[in-house]
Length: 200
Ligand code: TMP
Image (cartoon, rainbow, N blue to C red):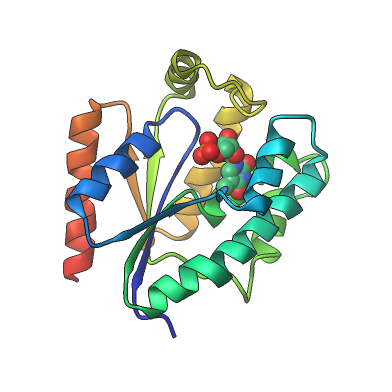
């Protein structure tokens, strides 16, 4: 059984989540930082799919393959060494995003996507969920200039609703953070919540 702790950072595009991850690197220098999609060849295939018009089901399985490789090669070994592991996006991104891209194909796509992770994924010990008005998030994405097919208002509203549903299902695992405040303040709040969690 893994001995370390797995902390994931989740939320829609434009919450500032990745900037917060960079701040956390300074606050937790001993921790190990990783992300999904990964930088390996499967992660690159994921990127190709989301930057083009990939079939949603094929795209889901690319994300899932990336997750499986990530768990086997990175997450489990780091946890076995007793590390605190931070992942910028992880399985909840799949439940929330692919829960929307596949919503026409399944009655409850979120539950279906959760189902294909069951029994092999490593469930995070703590998940920080960054929430924001999706309109503000879109304007931030615009400033950043990274336009993927996911950075659309109606889509991100549904993704955020899915994230909030997941948080409701597992209130002990999730901490919800309002990402509309100043980045520095958000960073400090997150750092405090993580320190409290690690003290327990
Ligand atoms: P990134 O912006 O964090 O690099 O993630 C790329 C995009 O992929 C982002 O819009 C979120 C989306 N995504 C999914 O749709 N499903 C997933 O499982 C993951 C990890 C990301």
